[in-house]
Length: 271
Image (tube, one colour):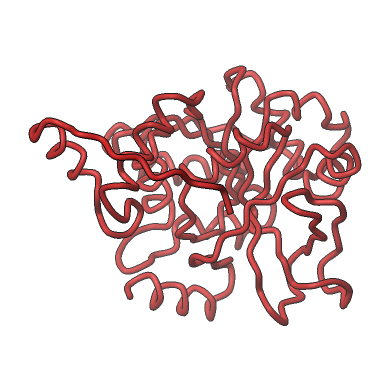
């Protein structure tokens, strides 16, 4: 846990009212949290871009259109990004699926953001998809999300943690006792030192949630072959170099590719 120092400040009433408008009781929990968010965003380099990985299997792509209490998953994700000041989103997915997304969401203007679609004419893998859209990325850290994930992670805290760690990559991880269906990691402090394949019985169940903050230099580490994956080809190399951190969070997180998990996620999200 980060060390904190108590600070007393005096603000004009009008300014305080503007601070209070940020408090929603969920993402921004209270007035102190709102002030911390404002200071963090004002003093730290901004992450302005997010990449959504929605290639691969059909179920993974179609998850973006899954309905959670009347809203498509993509609408929810774009709303979360907007709340945390990320207004530019790049969606990497199958060429045919892009037409369906464009029909529903266009270029994102109606949702208050900018969507750029990056087609995959062949299977590229999670790392290959990033290399494919490298020309669209700024020379600054960026957020990466898998397109089949519903989560309540605090994106601003995730990004700030990455900036504080000063490493090339940070993975959002979550304790999931008894869970063997997701890739697992070994931790030493905040550093990830080893990956485990899905389904193994080794280690403790700290799982990779498919949420990453990456330095742009990570793109240069992606092997030039197809397909190539962050999880098996890039992150293990970063871990060996001591350049991979873990952000542990306890909020909601679901891979909604299965109907049963989608139903459970929808129920929990409503609550």
